[in-house]
Length: 369
Image (cartoon, rainbow, N blue to C red; front, side, top):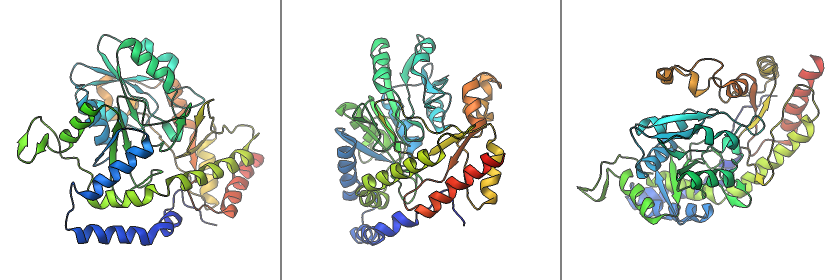
């Protein structure tokens, strides 16, 4: 049996005719940038996100950059970021000239440890940038309390957690501005690069609209120095179709995760995903941990299963951030996760036989070793 890490076949077959129709409608409209398809998707995504507005942009990294720009965060400022995250969270801070200040994760949730944030706040700190990693929400109530206490902005990185909730509130609706990605592999994925900013503050959201379009509200008249980061009509039309199915596909992810939880529980040496009280996990990634990670990965590959590592080298050890002179051991929990984590296939359309085969293969590795 051959099982890829990710397959789009099931979900795209589910909506293929609608996607084709959406494509034809955009072509027939002869309008490809900043048109009705974008407006339609923005309205629908804002409603799903329970925010006043959503602004479509070119990708998730730009969504973060534009959010920080709109909050006037730049040179000389510091932004609290997770040490354990995809490097895009750091790159956005660097892109506006600010300094990312990393905080270690909670070893159970892998998200930023809220108990360690305040010790990193200085007079230069302007914002906290929590990342809802792997599909599990951060403890946003505590983060918002800290931000209010220290008069800081909050920008959520919601790229991996569409429809996840913390204490009943959907992620992407807590912060002053909130950024998400619709990269094809995300739970809500476009057929190319795409992203969005969500929020309730009309003035900030209007500024994001201007910043994404060269700093211009009226063509050829530029109020501020902006960038070109517009969600095109074709991707907006595709996303509007896929948005109709996101709840259904998310439920499938949760059901597969339940099967994994049940089938892989009580295996010595294997750590399964943890869900903190009050949170709903949407399982963008089903991440397990073991000190035998590399051996398990090879065993599964030999069995025809394709696992994946998110992320093998933390941001603080990347050459891109060598100016900070971080070294191995500076963020031990982050490094422990990077050295022991393995993501096993989880996507809508994974069959019962495939799920059983993955479970049995993982069990076989541990019971034979």
